[in-house]
Image 1 (cartoon, rainbow, N blue to C red):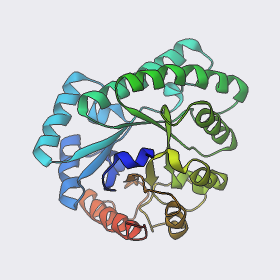
Image 2 (image 1 turned 60 degrees about the vertical axis):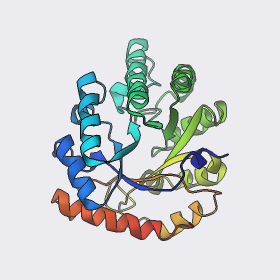
Image 3 (image 1 turned 30 degrees about the horizontal axis):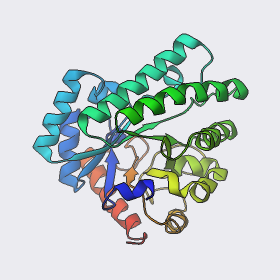
Image 4 (image 1 turned 90 degrees about the horizontal axis):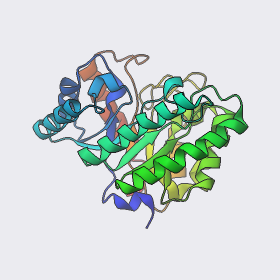
Amino acid sequence: MTPCDIFATMELAISTCYDYRVSFDKSLEYIRHAGFGVVSLGGKLSHSEYHKPEGRRMISDVQQRTGIRIDSIHAPFGSTADITQSEEALRRSAVMDIKRCIAACKELGVRIAILHLNSYRTDGISQRMKKVRESLSELTSFAGENGVKVAAENLPGDNSLIILKYALDLFGADCLGLCFDNGHAELHPEAFDLLDKYQDRLLALHLHDNDSVKDLHLLPFEGKCNLPNLAAQLNKASSICPITIESEVTNSVHKNPEKFLAQAYEAGEKFTRMLKT
């Protein structure tokens, strides 16, 4: 059984990062009205506050009211949540942030925790590889104890790709899966090889678009990404992993949240029609 086989059907999801200006409860109402039945919680803690007991209660209440299912939670990311940093106190803090994400997944009945293995600064790669091994040993063990799958996301840049491949080769499929981000891969095309080498490790796919220069997080088909080619690559796999639209209003021509979500659903449906059933 591949990781994706744990999902009975492939459902299109959208990340709550699409517009953090919209309150979490109103955001899920808009998302449901646009036609989505599944969401991924974005990594901005102040939006959903999934790391707090009161935040998780609020999330459960909104889920009950809207009927939306959460299929993944994105752990915090960036320089303050970098599990490869050399400063031990900062690394420990980052590990604890991700543990809180995993614990929230368990409490909310969410299958997947998504994380960046490093920040966009990737100097001192040998030291970072040592730290990622140490951090992931602890995190994957904790996730396994809590029945949660951990998916590491590809980031732009040579060193980030080296760190990701190192981690995937070091930890088996039972411990660590892959979240493939097509927009990040567009900025670093070597990452598309991940779809072939680790197709049985795919737990999630982040779908968005850009101009092949900047990480714009546009709506699918709003930029220059070769989405038909992406679909063709995915169709080589034995099963299709869950797909999450990770687009944002910031650089889109659609600034109104409700209009944006309607366009996101239409674009997502267009992409999924390219995939095998």
